[in-house]
Amino acid sequence: METLEEAELCFPQLLNTSCKKPTGPHSDTVLIKVLMSSVSLLTVVLNLLVIISISHFRQLHTPTNLLLLSLAVSDLLVGLFAMPFQILLTEPCWLLGDLVCVLYFVLAFVTLYASIVNMVLISVDRYVAICDPLHYPTKITRRRVQICVLLCWISCVFYSFLILLDNLKQPGRYNSCYGECVVNVIGAVDLVFGFIIPISSIIILYMRVFVVAVSQARSMRSHIAAVKLQRSVTVTVKKSELKAARTLGVVVAVFLMCYCPYYCVSLSGYDIKMASSTNTFMNFLVLLNSCLNPVIYVFFYSWFRKSVKIIVTLEILQPHSCQTNVL
Figure 1 (tube, rainbow, N blue to C red):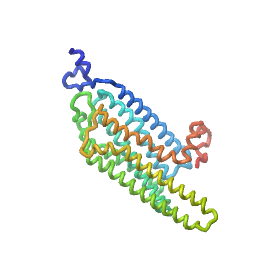
Figure 2: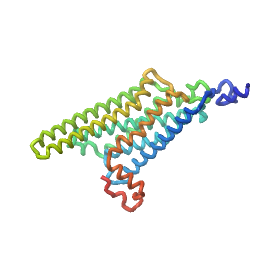
Figure 3: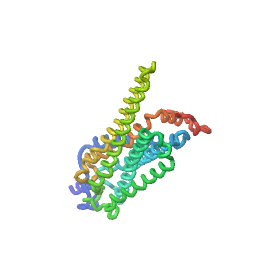
Figure 4: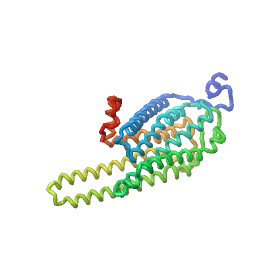
């Protein structure tokens, strides 16, 4: 009997101070691991293709694409580090120690916040491009974008260390037993700076962009009313309106779908605990956004499809391939 009880502990040698392994069928855990592993691999591959495309082809070295590159880097790190460690958190016991546990969350928070801030920067870029196109070349320069990207990453690192400072000072202080990986975050602060402010900025900017785009489209229709090809042009304009509305709707809807469940819980403060099915599902949704970002922001561009074709067919290895026309 004593042997069976010790077998149920994460660290049998620690007896009463060790966490107990939950008993029961593990089919659901296996399914979660397979799903998260697939999403992790897909996230790495998609974002790696984005990084190679924008970095290699000279035609893609624009301020806007530099923001997409920064977004792809943050999402790549999510797929490379955050997702695999999240899979480890589905295990009944955490065996890597308290310090590794805290460092994992620091890395996860840095990459996730960088992804969110990059989305906001992309929203600002598109806002200026649509609402103030004449001054766009002077306002949005490569130098300014590089500074913004650098500040983005520095602020995300600083913020992540700040909200996890107590956990870094004393790793494992919130664990109730050995074999647990628990960190404490001030839910209200994270809710405001990690969700409300970014999503509000994105929604406001994109709604303004959509209003201006529709207004410009209607203005164009009024100017071509006397043209013989009015019918075909009108159809084209209507299609562009619908495409703009669909794209903006997908951006906001996917972000809300991925982040709302997680931050709704943080309204009352939360603990991120290992082996919790609820937290596992919410964390999976948040991480899934990093897989969907390259689809939303890049797959809608024809240049990416051309770049992927060149990369997959190994034409990228040919001399002067960086000068290939992909636009």
